[in-house]
Amino acid sequence: MEVDHDAEINVFLDSDQLCFSQPDLRDLSAPMMGRKVFYPGAASMKDRWQRAYEVCDTPMPQHRLVVRSRDPNDPPLVTPPCFNSGLISVHRA
Image (cartoon, rainbow, N blue to C red):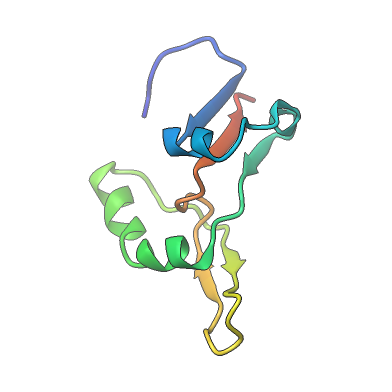
């Protein structure tokens, strides 16, 4: 995703997120922001991120997030920050 541009903030948005509500643009003031992913979305991508980063010849991020299910019987998932969140914004700096 090495696109040449002069934007101060990069925003990655799944267009289906617009069907739920208009994004709150005040969220873009944070240096890095990702909407919370629900447990099923995190679980569906659990083993795919390593391969995706290998294909892009990019190292996996070291930071991990814990995603919990509403069902207390489901174990928490530990996932990279680049999961299926629907909206991610990152400041250029």
